[in-house]
Image 1 (tube, rainbow, N blue to C red):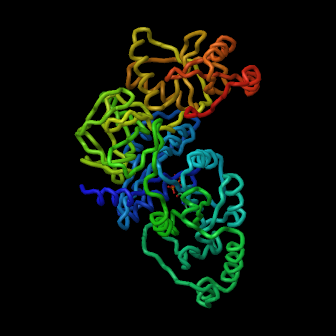
Image 2: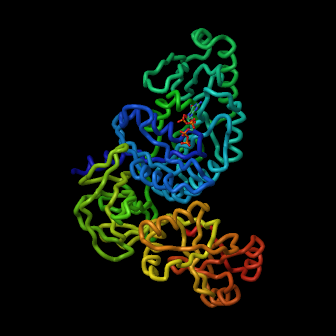
Image 3: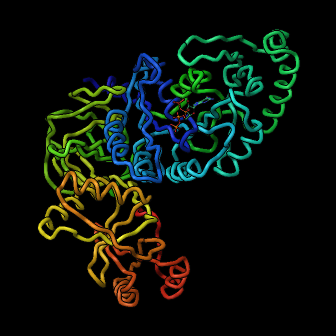
Length: 529
Ligand code: G4P
């Protein structure tokens, strides 16, 4: 392929994630976007990937979720000349770390907020990760067909709780049973609301001038006047939209609509492909890699084990950062310092999987893996560099893991090793007792681990309680001081999978005390410091 073609392949790619608190409408919005993209033919084709029963352990649900989430992990489609890749993020909060890692592979996000519930806890945490990574954000306020919060109050809430500056690109007219439609501030069009879940037809009235009596005819004089007043206030309070500000995360454009009624989704998609960033550069421990570089670079952000226990192979999801990836070409697996080539390469087009021969920056390919990959691994054409910023987050739930079947010690060790490579949880080795501690984001993971160890590795484990409040990585540049720390805090000292020192604090006070004892120590709650 000639150089200009390669460039235009990059420019036309839009790789993004949709994030929300469960039930805000992420699955519904994804489905409608896929309908517009022609990637699916009917509503209901995308299964919600949430585990509905969160308190009871329901292994069928977990297994189902794993089955579904391979198919819907990445959904690619073509729209108006752009190649759109939607990366799915698990809805269940116990799988939040999976979501955080997926966010390392997206170039932008759409945040869905329920108009009645406003900003919810999980939205806050996910947006925090996006902000940390400077990922451009678009906000979609959903369910305008229901009564909810006032648009201005909601924008205030978004600004305050998510610490984002916003600027509305559309504005709702009424809500709930009185929802009339939205006025596109961006395109200066009025779109009237006609509830419908399946049609993709649109009804628009061009209202270039708000004084146009057509507006009154379309929505009624009261609503027309309220809209005029609102828009006057909007133009006084919110900054004028500039793409540059959105790309640099200075401002987040906001849209209103109703995903289930397929309302406001098309303009969201069309504006999205117009303004959203092409694949972003990536930081490595050597230098920044630009997507337009000719040589291939990619990294593993997700590993998915085969749900069939008889086939213990896995799919490693690789985000292409630069260059063109070719099937059957030799690439350097940087961590393992060896060349590897891949004959089984999967591309993801909506819920279908197909084999591809080449892929471009922004694309995600699935590589068949027999246990060579770990989350965060980098592939290059020979340069020895590692993509940075695939973080582990300080877990919040901890238990000792013990072998419950002495004959299966090896299977247990292998199972733990591979599940940790997949990023299901984190392993710490307590330095005083040499016992293994598993740390997870949510309690459900312990059950997933136990279940998978038994069914996939034929090993049995049991859990024992341990009182840990937080595990944080300790940074001390002076090796003598670190040794001193290890000695004095031995009861709370562990090593992570990469042999990095970790402080297992049993309370917030313990961290405070450790900080006072070792003023030069830095305590990190995210591994990529
Ligand atoms: P999630 O992936 O963010 O968890 O949310 P999901 O799309 O599954 O939507 C959660 C619920 O909200 C669904 O209802 C869905 O139909 C509904 N919903 C989504 N968008 C809108 C909207 O614009 N207006 C209204 N009124 N409802 C909306 P459910 O009853 O939980 O599921 P279902 O039986 O309808 O599938």
